[in-house]
Amino acid sequence: MLSPQILTKGAESAVLEGERLVVTTADTRKEIPLAAIREVRRDTETSLKVVLTDGAPHWVMGGNPTATALFHTALDAALPEERDPAGSSLVTVTDDPGAIPWWKVLGWSVAFLAAYTGYVWWTTVAHGGEMGFIAFVAGFGTLIGLLSVLAVVSNLWDRWVLNRRGVTVLATADHYPNGKRSEFYKYTDTHGNEYLQRGSSNSTPHIQVVYDPQKPSRHLQRKWLPFVVVQYFFGTLAALGVLALGLWGVLAPYL
Image (tube, rainbow, N blue to C red; front, side, top):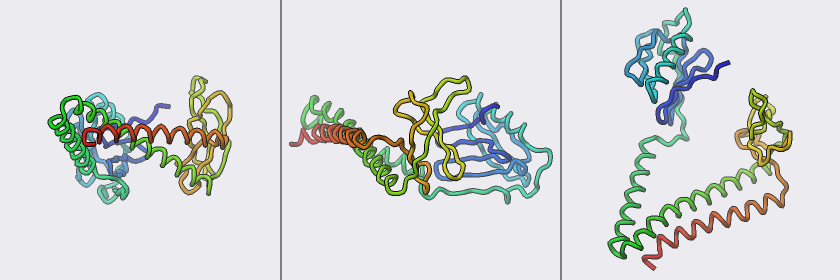
């Protein structure tokens, strides 16, 4: 069985899910029943124009001409013989309230780059090229250290939540179709949904996985407590160390 093809460009993607075309962006999910589509046209080399039975157009963007052409063929082949004239009334659009709009991400990125460039330039002018180079490297070190600290905090939060309400299950080693072991283990929650957990070692046929029944996507491999303590202790030290060195480099020219 062929894997479903996904047409992507940037944060937008389109995929055939059952009897509908699903188009997702950074903050919305649009579901178009295939019965509501009258025809699909090639708008440009990397875009498709989906015309509904009531004449309303929708566009699907692709990253390259080859992928767009193949998706066009697959979508045409999936259209049913009988169509529903209701058209647009069958389309559902769901907003993701937690999503950050792309223009905000772009704005923050531009603001950060402008501030970073201004800081490096000012340091170079005021304190010389050597200090400017230190500031340039230290800026990235500070960012990496900050992201590392946030990752440790997020992981510790997951551990704390799972310790309070987590359910432990036995996960079985996953295999590729050719029989080769993968680095993941497979388990099923109480609702029958299947998940994959990356194992710290794939030498055993089973591992124990703890997942959150209120948010099954939150799951971690269950490990021996002293090992977890040592792991997070040194991980936290490393993250704080990188952050401290980065901050020292950023502030050194002005101390």
